[in-house]
Amino acid sequence: MKKMLFLTAVAAAWIACDRDDECRPTADDGQQITILVGIADSKPVSDVIPESKTTITGSTAAWKSGDQLGLFCTQSVPAAVNVSFSATGNGASATWSADSPIYWGAPATTPHTFLAYSPYASGNSSASAVKVPALNVQTGTVNPALDLLISNNLASSGVLRSAGAVGLVFTHALSLLEFDITINSSIAANTTLTSFTVAAGSSDKVYTTDGNSTIALSTGAITPGSGVTNTTTMTPGATVTLSATSASVYVLVLPGTYSQAPTLAINLNEGGTSAIAVPPASLTTTTFAAGSKYTYAVSIARTAITISNPTITDWTNVNGSAINPGL
Image (cartoon, rainbow, N blue to C red):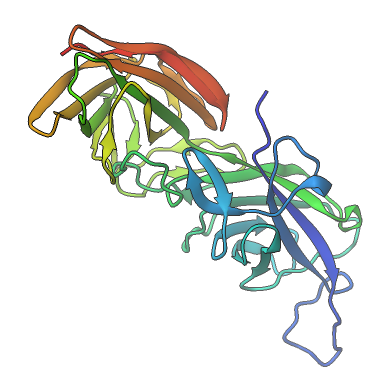
């Protein structure tokens, strides 16, 4: 079962409306829509501890001060079209405020539907075509600016103002590959990872390259733009020294079913002196689900490269087959 990773509570707060204040929109009793954002593992909204999002430890995301999300609501006053909400403070002290206040619409019996995404980007004028970040430049860690999150659990049923706090569930819109890499004694000590390449079939759309692909928030369906590619080579942003203890690197990819299982190719610097190109090995997986993390144990030896069968967990995590590349 997938975990509910990100919860957003949308609450109504009484706003004192001055009859002479013509700057405020006409709304039902002048109740402003405000948000409280938290991270939870299948916890009810009341148990959510506000956290921050754009800090990443491994593959775990958390909110932080300065984070922004974009909100859409057709029934609010005015109608919310990519309204930016920003976090102030970190952890439990974080508060969220809209750049432009929105209010509950009248009458009070009107269901309000909400769609949201993060990180925020200006220019997204339609909830059915939010831009997907370019994924072709990655460095082996999960970049918060690329980890697209969406909320659509209230896209159809909606909620009434009288419901009080309204929970929006945020999930990851992309798929994540995790490679836990080890070397055995046949490889020299102090060997480092210089680059790695994940490549699929020639017709497969794995990485966006220009930021023109879009996602429909209501369904999570991604429409690839003209700038997509089936392969990209990633260079670690920091030194990754390999040993018998696994070192992890990560790659965000577009979800979907590929024509063939992607392959992983690795380049090493052995002992600080010799460049080694490890031959590609298959990941054996062809379908990658949005919000799932596929974890592969990669064991490098001079005789073979092995890739473990993937496991899936909620991020979702998916363990891959063993990868044992030979040298």
